[in-house]
Image (cartoon, rainbow, N blue to C red; front, side, top):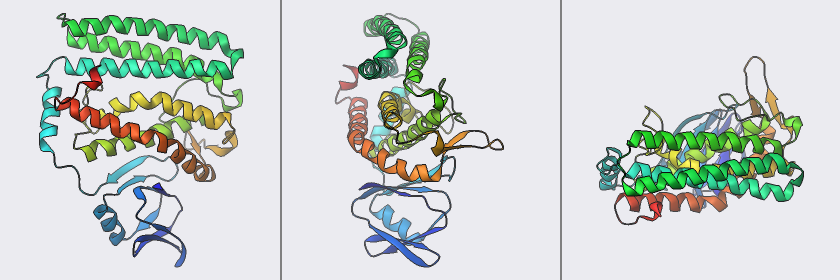
Length: 334
């Protein structure tokens, strides 16, 4: 089962033996066994009794709270977290530049993998949309050139050439930004004009594709936050994204690797007409474009089916990072 999504206004959740019981106006509407659950996502105005929260915590099942319409993150509860304090000490040591090349090597690998994923998506799209060969090929060529430049930076990092680390990091961010610009110039052409997807925008998203991308990126982000916290790392201390109060910078780091997979998923569900513009709402009084409640009910199973295939990658990515930080494996730097 994996994740349970609770998205029905005024639903009351109680504990019934080894199951969650759902009530509406005092009448039982259904039950879900606790055993197969590893995460619960609560959307909107839901009442959860304390015994439910206690039982989920005992079973180490995380609860994520999102707002009703905009699906904005409000918080997350876990059971017992990892007790490996030494791992966090090592993470802080890496962040404070006891090993000045750690962040550079990590960040270089992250940017390289993200751009490779973007390039692979566009190359695959050519087989389905050959009529878009010109914009797609142009973007791929730009990404290829950026990858060549990244090889030169990699050489500098490995040689320890004495370049200013801040300058190298700024170069990486510049290349990532240039790659994103080229990539989205082609990615937007894959969608029907009726969706009005012209560029990547957010806070708030202005069209159905951006709304879906933002929703998926939000879910992805907190899936990875959960993996990081359960492993014993500090999600606020990243190596590519700078420290910013209240931001899970390490999760932001790891999310970058999986963005192309999310992009492919979003393209697929629109391509297969799982969603159209009618499934989204726009309100002049509250700017932005958002998936309607009926659309959300169809979205959750689709997201879960996709996520089942990539969650093991999240776990493996975090596990490998832990081993690298502890000096047990340099697999991230290969």
